[in-house]
Length: 118
Image 1 (cartoon, rainbow, N blue to C red):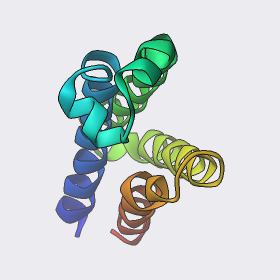
Image 2: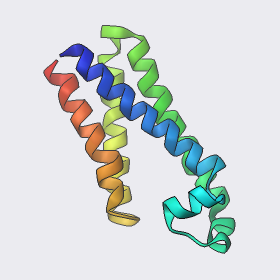
Image 3: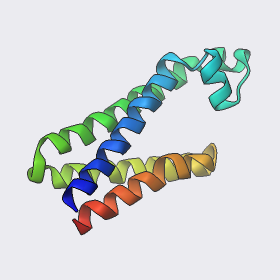
């Protein structure tokens, strides 16, 4: 069960690396425009905000990777960063798009549940 929990934590970390790439590097590219349903004009105006958001997603991924690297000693760190992801996902769902709940908060909640039941 611990292995399954760590795989789930790693998956959440990889999702956040993907979000980092989308927001920091692909925001105003065709793939980013399609992903976020934006016009090129809106992407240009919001690009610096998206880059900042992407950087924060990178910090979440780094924290989860740090917890995984520590093995059993990283339980609290993994739990903390998963809780941060859940809070950010719920906030994003309330303020930006309900889709964020399913893409960000739910995977983190599943990983957190697996982590503490392992």
